[in-house]
Length: 107
Image (cartoon, rainbow, N blue to C red; front, side, top):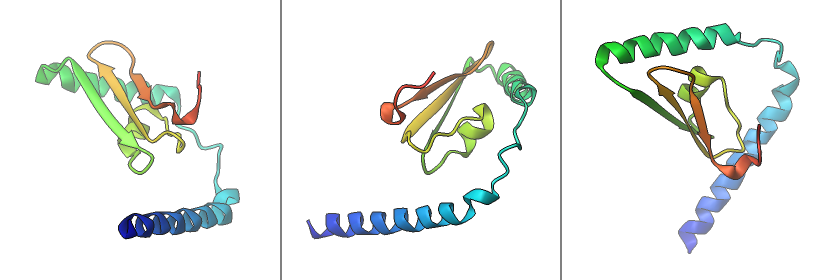
């Protein structure tokens, strides 16, 4: 039990520090900088071309609230409320995003 309390305490401290950092810098974020959809479509096509060369039918990329870079790069999606999520990119077609229910219902 002692170890669990220590872990919870460390987690609470980290969350508090992260929230302070976000509060301090949130106004500095330029939300107008968006990657165009065409860029994502080009990424998908380049990956699909490489998959075809290798003989792969499907690409599975996973991420979490702590490690989101691959999913964000591939699909432009990140919701810190969702603990785990993945992108499935078929050889032909658009990617499918799989996510936990932590973030609530999303369209």
